Amino acid sequence: MARFTLPRDLYHGKGALEALKSFTGKKAMICVGGGSMKRFGFLDRAVAYLKEAGMEVELFENVEPDPSVTTVMKGAEAMRKFQPDWIVAMGGGSPIDAAKAMWAFYEYPEVTFEELCTPFNFPELRTKAKFAAIPSTSGTATEVTAFSVITDYEKGIKYPLADFNITPDVAIVDPELVEGLPAKQVAYTGMDALTHAIEAYVSTLHCTFTDPLAIKAIQIVNSDLQKSYDGDMRSREEMHYGQCLAGMAFSNALLGIVHSMAHKTGAAFADYGAHIIHGAANAMYLPKVIAFNAKDPTAKARYGVIADKMHLGGANDDEKVDLLIKYLRGMNDDLNIPHCIGHYGPDSYPAEQGFVPENVFLERLPEIAKNAIADACTGSNPRQPSQEEMEKLLKCCYYDTEVDF
Image 1: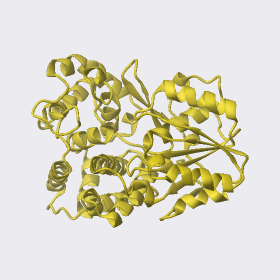
Image 2: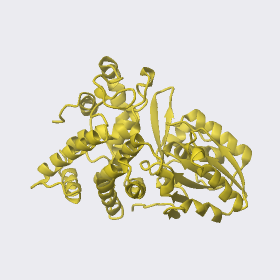
Image 3: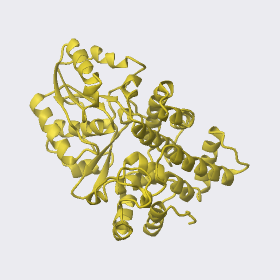
């Protein structure tokens, strides 16, 4: 028996933010990030709509990118003081992910972070509050997923939390919120969405319900990401919906080792002055992982289907896989994304010399590989890597060398 879970309600289209007027409750806490929602007026509108619905509203602001365990605990404490019956998270993936974890600690103060790190081990939520998510980026799709990513800065590791309990009750997918996205963010979140869809389609847990969502998302990214990057607002709206479809697919089919590697390298070199931004990491690693996974015949055939749906050509699956990899590398060039860690600059743009020194990478490689294998996303990857294979794969992602094993 398998399970397919999505939010009960998904409001979409321009003006969908007004759905907040229909919420029923006494208190709502809004969790937001750095300030774009405030600058563009969306936060004020959300507060006004909730007050119009008869609620008292409190804000938890300034959730940082790659939210920390510390921020989660502060937010949970604020919730325990305010006692909301609605948690409304709005912004990029970071405030929504953070709010999901806060929700668990609000309802169960005695639970430990270590307990929540065990996949599908959350206590039963909704004893105190319901959850609404309003994304302002087009990539993570956390508004429809059973996942949250929280960073432990002391250990330099990103932990994916996974449980159907943290699938939001309501998702509000309003394209007006993404019209002001910077081009860099359009690129990285778009490649994150594409990685979600491709990994979900080849996952060992894919099914009849997830496959159409993944394929449609891939087709939208193929058609609209470049145009959205170039500033076309109709394509930006389509990307906002496409990333949501990708989220519906991967929340139920799960992901693979592109995400395992991205989670475990993202903050691993923070002491050298930068993070490897999640969407950029996915974009760099995806072509390498496809080459690795395609050694599995079933995965190869499914990559072939993806290439067909993207109209890439190819007379057989080997040619289709090669064309898919070539296409993805071309997308990285067009979106100004590096091809490997060795050329990943501190500003996330391609550089002759990246911010991660070779000797530091090699020194930390065994531990990163071990952590990636243990990541929650590895189990549904179509090909299970050994420690040696994961180290070799990560080296290919550092040096941009061919995957021939």
